[in-house]
Image 1 (cartoon, rainbow, N blue to C red):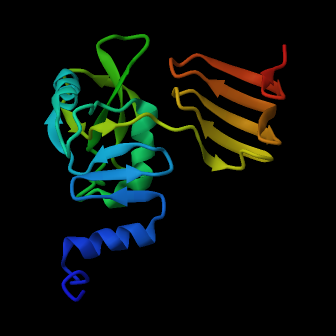
Image 2 (image 1 turned 90 degrees about the horizontal axis):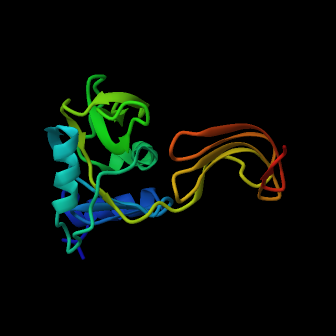
Image 3 (image 1 turned 180 degrees about the horizontal axis):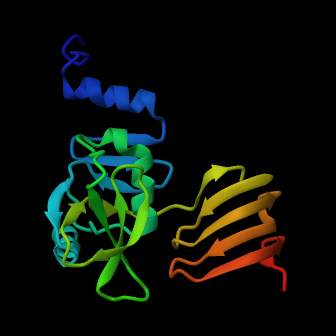
Length: 197
């Protein structure tokens, strides 16, 4: 029992992660975010181009899994909330992460995220070299912030769509903004989960 709780032991670290953050499960190579359902590679990969990043994640085999991929921009943004579980998560203003989401207007550009602040951008030229963190599993639908039952909240759907606005009895009700994963957007009134025309 003494060896298990040795302060510098990896088991001690994992127990602390488990106790401090009930939304997380970790092993030595993977971090699982229970809130989103996503599994992340713990260690980031050196900076590379977008196509190299896509290929790297697609061919990766870690902890018995071979279905790793580069995350969508919506998935990537959720990684910022659990950044403390990743060793050496950069906080410099010149560190960026790739996502798999391509700019809908310019095929040579893709979305990414600033490491400092977790802010997304959509103008990363695919020949640029950014950091990579691979992911697996499908994103679960969840309330990102606010009150998605009765009040104002931001909800992310499993397909990458997002709704930000008023809720009543767990339904979109009142003014809100619905953004499809492809970038199309509706702003206006909702009643019982339906757009008011």
